[in-house]
Image (cartoon, rainbow, N blue to C red; front, top):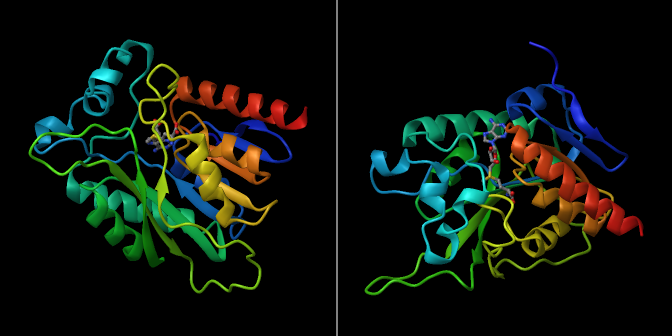
Length: 256
Ligand SMILES: C[S@@+](CC[C@H](N)C(=O)[O-])C[C@H]1O[C@@H](n2cnc3c(N)ncnc32)[C@H](O)[C@@H]1O
């Protein structure tokens, strides 16, 4: 199999188009300051039949999003059972942490169903678990007779101890930000740029953030806007193209 090479490479950005395990093989060890990523959750249902539906069927169910389903593509890797998800998460986190500098940050998004398995995987892979940062989706729907599941969570940890002297910012541990409207969305589960701009500030300016599951490239756009370097990977060509467009536009905007 040929080596995975970047399809876009600039001073501050490298984008890879392959399975992230292949990209991790070519990354320089101990070279990134943070891994901030939004992997497939393999969630979205109570039963295995519900969880094996297409990603659009699972994650675009509300009245405000379902009418836009046809304009987006499904995404990859969202159909593992619980044991498979735990094993796979542990495996890729272990590999990704080889690229992380000592004391570096690893933060992974998940939802309420996959929160326990994600915190287990992070620790099994050798990170020190430091916390869970809720993202409250202000506009998420409520349901009669239930507490709303209107948060997603960034499970985060460090590679060994993290000294404080190099870090000047004290960051928030809870974010209230509206989801990307279905009309504007370029990815089924796109994260808001505003949220990612806040999160990438865990790394000092000029530091490097790795997102092995970049989807439409939101973390990359946030890094460009906040003056951080970015390394991203996406397996599907349709989303590689979207990430390329969005990150290129952000770079042009920043340079103007
Ligand atoms: C939850 S989405 C990320 C969405 C992203 N945060 C955004 O704002 O657009 C996860 C992405 O990882 C991609 N993916 C799944 N398995 C992958 C793999 N093994 N290697 C690289 N990318 C993968 C999916 O195709 C999907 O686009």
